[in-house]
Amino acid sequence: MAEYKYKRVLLKLSGEHLAGDQGYGIDPKVIDGLALQIKEIIEKSDIQIAITVGGGNIFRGMAASTKGMDRAQADYIGMLATVMNALALQEALERVGVYTRVQSAIAMQEVAETYIRRRAIRHLEKGRVVIFAAGTGNPYFTTDTTAALRACEIGADVFMKATKVDGVYDSDPMQNPDAKRFESISYLDVLTKELHIMDSTAISLCMDNSLPLIVFCLEPDTNMERALRGEPVGTVVY
Image (cartoon, rainbow, N blue to C red; front, side):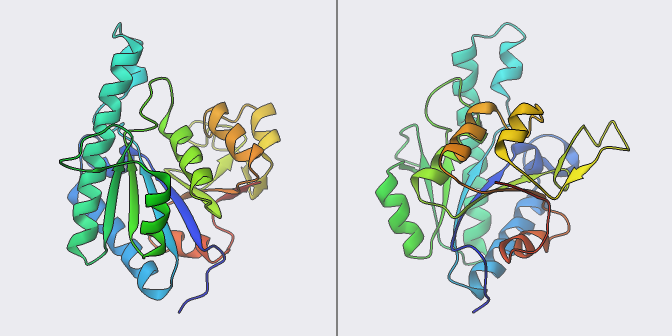
C-alpha cells in the first residue's frame, strides 16, 4: 500500500476541465484519463475519494442570469448539467473497474441516489468513489460552495480543487506574466487580498472548519498523486 498524507479526500472538478480542448460538452479522452488516475491511486492505497463536479461545460447558471434569465431557474438548469457530468464520470470509472455511487441533491432516483450524508460516508468506507451532483439542491450556491460543504459533512481531510493553473497567484497569470504564485497562503489572506480562487461562502466554510485546501493543476497526470503524498504541488490554503 502506498503512503498518502490524507485518508479521505474531496476532489472538486470543474465542468470546463471535462470539456477538454473542444471547450464544450464532455471529452471522452479527458474523463477516461481522470478515471485511470483515480483507479491507480485507489489500487495503491485505501484512500477514500469523493468528487464534486461542476457543470460549466454544458450550462452556467450565473452567466445565463446576466443575460436576462431568472437566476433561480438558471441555477437549477446548471445543477442538472452537473448530474450529466457526474453520470459520464461514473461510467468512465466503472468501465475501468472502480465502484462508484452518484448522489444527487435533487431527487432523481432512476439515475442517482438522493444525497444522504451517512450513506455517502458508508460508501466511502466500503471503497467506493462517491460523486456529488446537483449542487446543494438550492439556487444561488456555486459548486465550489457545494464542494466545501460536502467536504465538511463527510469529514474530509483535505479539499482538492483542480484548476487550469498550477496554484494561487497574486493576479491572473493568464493576463500577467509576472504574477507571483503562493506555495501556501491563509484563508484570511485569500479573502483580504480578494484573490477569488473560490466564492467567499466556500472559503469561509473551509476556514471556519479548519479544512485545508490544495489548489493545483491536473496536468501532468501525476500531480494528483503527488499532492496526496504531501509533495509541494500547487498552493496549500490553510
